[in-house]
Length: 362
Image (tube, rainbow, N blue to C red; front, top):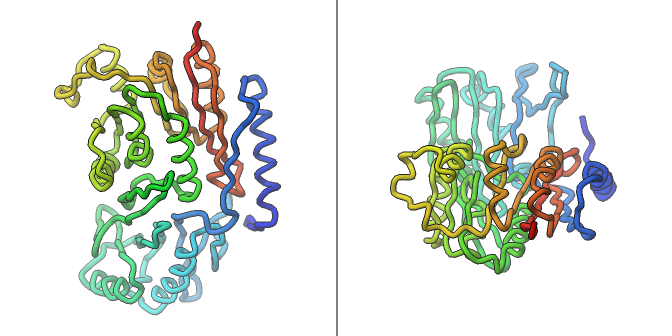
């Protein structure tokens, strides 16, 4: 089990930065790389724990890689203060009720900076009316929305989302974050990534194409810097949340299309038509910038070729290794103007990076 010591935070970040510089040794990075450290404790807004049953008691637990027997979790220092408070009250409630504890195998917490929370209880049995009434009483006592899940079953007692409020450049943004949908785990760092992206795209003008827009996390903030935004996302849950979030933040210059990055690239290249784009005139857009926030695998070849046609490329990456490979390709048409590092995952080897590239004259 990893020991979290906030006194060692800066050392672990320095080690990751040293490794990053070694990784990008053959890439011409700007002289000044911007570094955004995380809070050393209570930075993580979501958590998932295994439930370990032993001697008639349930415990929060995690597994070491390669180990079948888990270790017991009594506190979670990297988790939000709210997660830690809810852990204490919830495990007491679970152990006081055979209805709540029977065949419970996992618990998920989703919290926000604004103090909202959602708990999901996962079971290896079908949930019945007795469970629902017991869980409703639990929800009333702890003051947090509860969801029950088992195979092919989801029981939402009140709601299946939390409401987050983030402040970027002295402006508040409200986000619906749905259970099961992707959200940035480190909300403090997320605010810094949003502020950095907003600053680096100021004055770009024209229209923005955003691929992998998720629940509109970046979309809601960046829309103010462009005339219009066309955003794509493949997940139905995320598209629905993004639409809700645009409305909540009174943003009306964004169009969202539920398509994969690969399909949209084919549409923009005129390879083949798509019914989901039949009401959108792609030729009317004057794209100046493309924003990319891909999964860990990085960009596919189609998206790489498409991005190289844009004057500006804003790229947020959760994997420096795939980012490096993509930057090698972009090097033939663009140069790196800004490079930032966001310590989204302290005490791990992971680093989030932000890059702004501009087309070269050649």
